[in-house]
Image 1 (tube, helix red, strand yellow):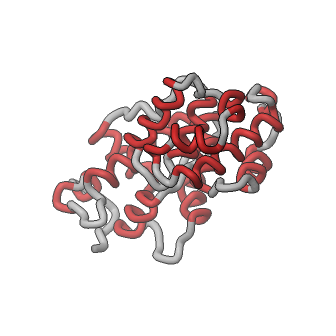
Image 2 (tube, rainbow, N blue to C red):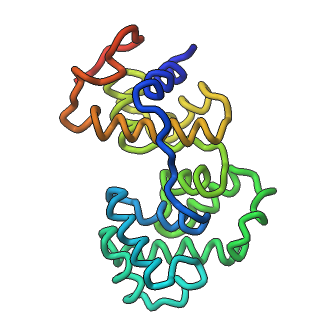
Amino acid sequence: MNIAQNIYRKLFKEFGKQHWWPGETTEEIIIGAVLTQNTNWGNVVRAIQNLKTADALSFERILRLSPQKLSNLIRPSGYFNIKEKRLRSVVQYFMERCGADFEQLALIPTEELRRELLSVHGVGKETADSILLYALGRAVFVIDAYTMRIGRRHGFLNEDDDYESARAFFERALHKDISLYNEYHALIVRLGKEFCRPKPRCENCPLNRGEFFMFQKT
């Protein structure tokens, strides 16, 4: 068992299934992936509920909204004027690419689709990979601030490792399994929120219990 597999085993034993990603449709998941930038999921839920109440939780209906109306609806997610532009750009990309018929994307190689997403205004690597994994069912491991913090503190990522090197670490070590990547990322977020905070709670961290392969860096 390698390092990445051992981490997953410990986290799953501690926390169990996390049931990610919240969302009833592919469009809703993509919308959520944009709105969750620089905020917590609770704020995203409130913004999505606003869109539902306004009967605007679809790509076609979002494009019919004025910038001011859309900004007001997604206000709970924070940075709403910036996110209005980003969300509109992402929606326009998908409408032009496949008309929100996501099955049309099935034959496009994942890396090609990733490059296209990264060229869309306001889409960074974490957002692109979240869309690929959770919305489009591609085996891409999502890296976030929690992953980098945990990895550096426990020594399996170096201080100079960036997003791509962290992604490569996990993708080399794990089977290309969508459900595994999905669950693993959710477990990392859970660990980051409960234990590996900016001020860490190392004494109770599940990665510091029993046999383990690393030292914790403060």
